Image (cartoon, rainbow, N blue to C red; front, top):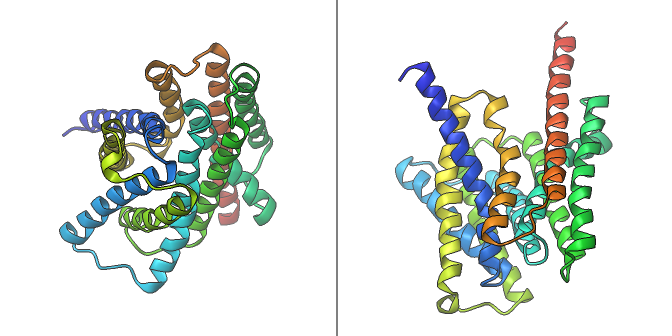
Length: 309
C-alpha cells in the first residue's frame, strides 16, 4: 500500500469515526426515551466493556490489572463513565441532542481553565482567551435560542447535568495526563466500562425502578446494539486506525465533526430544531475550541524549545 492509499484509508477511518460517534448521541437520545437513563448506560457499558476485555484477555492474552492499576481504573471509571457518560446520557431526557453534544465538546476549554486556576499552567495566551470566549459565546447562542424559543420542562436541569458531565470528563482527562498507568489504553477502557456498569446499575436501582429486560422495547435494544457495535467497537477501531495513519492534527478533527453530525442527524431523524442560530452557534463554539487547542499546543512547543535552549 503506497503513501497515498494509506492517507486515503486514514481519511476514510476518520470520517467513519466522526459519523458513528456523532450518531451515537442520537442513538442515546432514542434509547433513553425507551428506558431509564442510568439503566441504559449500564447495559451499554457492560456490553461494551465485556467485548473489549474479552478481546484483550482471550486474543491478546493480557494479564489482569494489578491492585494499583485497578484502583486508578476505578477512579477513571467514576469520572469518565459514571460522571461523564452517565450524566450526559441523563441530560438527553431534558435537552436536545445537539446542545448536549455541543456542551460535551467544550471539555478542552474547561481543561485549560482548571489547569490555569489550580496548576498555574503557563500554556495560556491571548489567543487561548479568545478561543475560550468564542467557545462559551457559541454555546450561549444555542442556549439563548433554546431558552426563549424551545424551553421544555427540566431544560435548565438538563444543561446543568450536561455541564457536570463535561467537567467530569475534563477532570478525568487531567488525571490521566498526570497519572500514567502502564496498561493498554483500550484494555483499560474496557475495564472502566465494566466497573462503571456495576456502579451505574446500583445508581439506577436506587434512583428509578428498573425496567425488566423483557419489557425493554425492540427500539431500545436496537439503539443499545448500535451504541455498542457502531460506537464502542467499529468507531473505536476506526479511531485507532486513523490515529496510526494520520498526523495528530488531522485525526483529532473528529472532535469538531461529532457535534455537527449529532445536530444534523438529530434534526433529520428526531425533528429537533435546526435553525441558522443553532448552526452558527455550533460553528462559533467549535472554532473557539479549535483556537484553544491550537494555542495551547503552539505555546507548549515554544516553552519546550525555551527549556531546551
